[in-house]
Length: 243
Image (cartoon, rainbow, N blue to C red; front, top):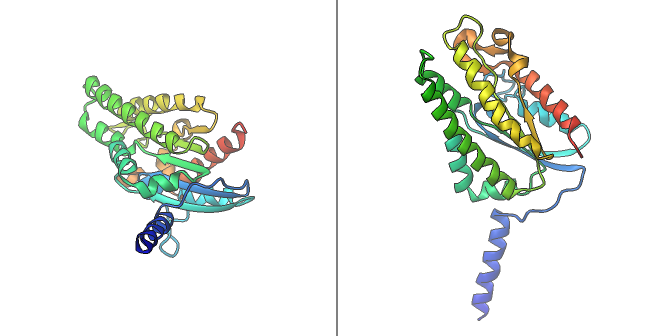
């Protein structure tokens, strides 16, 4: 009997170590969890001591730390698609448990779906292919958002929209101008939840594609300036949110 009780205690302690219970944070103590694709990882920003401190996650963390004690966890995975993120969230119990404790969650996803769509209809004539991929992305995004809200009804969730990285004259400019606003339009619906912020960088980047991204090197990722502009939009939305 003693042996059984000892084993039970060990199992309980182990579960608390690996999956700590969700605990309400004080107003001055915040856990910020960033999930998503290469933008969350900060790809395209410059490095200092092998760290991408100019990505939006480090910059937004610095902003939060002006008046809060912030613990940050970055789960950015370059190349991650919307279906990949949903699969990760469903499969990773440890990540689910961490999300339950977060005060702020940011999500950047859809950029790789964007690239797959753009490259699948390069002539821009097959509207059905564009619409089909958009519907799949929309359903996947709905499931992802529902999962996040089920895990954490109280966190401030920041959803990042898309910009069109292609300047005038690029072969993909028109497709990007169709796709990005469609994506931003359907995620805007989630802003009806007063605890959800939607960041739409489309207009800000329009006309600044060559200066704010690496598109001249055929790389759609933002540079330091682009990430700073995204962070600025996040700050404004965070400051204007309904308390």
